[in-house]
Image (cartoon, rainbow, N blue to C red):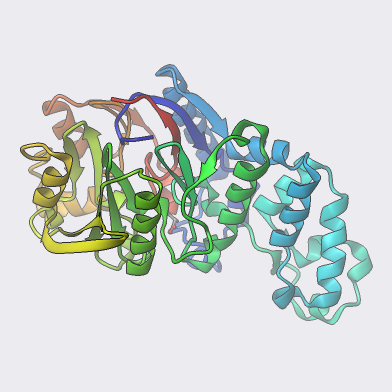
Length: 393
Ligand SMILES: NC(=O)NCCC[C@H](N)C(=O)O
């Protein structure tokens, strides 16, 4: 994987399931959703997203299926059971019961429990008298659900032929990495893939990682990815000879711009769509390998630093020319979060009518999907997809 726009061959998605049914007005903030999605409709929207990709010749892998298949391996089961039980939360006795309950489940049920979570009232009946169980509300989670697994972009990212498992910053998402890690470690399909950058390093999230061109990676540094995360990521890709330049791009530490891909995505070999409000202020620190270490230059304007590293005259920004209010509304609804299936062909939420119209005026083909329910988790087509193989440009 060397770019954001090479013809997309294989992508990892997660069809949302029962984990979304766990969202309530009491927990949605903590679980990083802005509303309570209508689950059946969210699934229909996701199915249509997957069909749009298949219609363009993309092989769609579904995380739940891969996880259940990987769990056929006893080592994967052991690791899954370990990652699913938080002893500090449920206490030693209940942790033992929970582990044996998970261990006795078949692979499909285990995958479901790890993704959808488990409330105290769903625990095996034998633990009825435990203090932890008695003092928790029956609807509290003994295993927290993972509604953000929908956003497969964030827990892993491919650079070249290597996959980086992300260390996710938000507590509600930390367990996602363990499941993704397990799929790559034990699913036969990935038995030959090698790792770049481990999940135990400083936080980097896939939504912050943009492969601008072969050898050039941009990493957003903000609410999720830390400067230390960007630096270790750079060290790892330099060591593996996967990049010659990594641009660390400061982004505002707020929910509207939680990842770099919420404000900027690539739509063609040399073009991005970008939230107009940041276009002139976005900067980048350039990191390059230097005598076994890393040389840092900048900050300089992002578009200039990117063009220089990509060795092109300039990185085009599609001129959306939107008024500030429309631009802010459409940025919030992931108008800039497009997924390219080929150079100049992107998947986008239909609701961002103005941004999409400007993209088309600029010659970009826009494949529209509906996302009224999917979008309640605050992520668009790029966030909901982890490309695994793209053709080399
Ligand atoms: N790359 C992305 O921007 N992913 C969207 C993640 C949304 C999720 N609800 C989160 O807050 O982490």
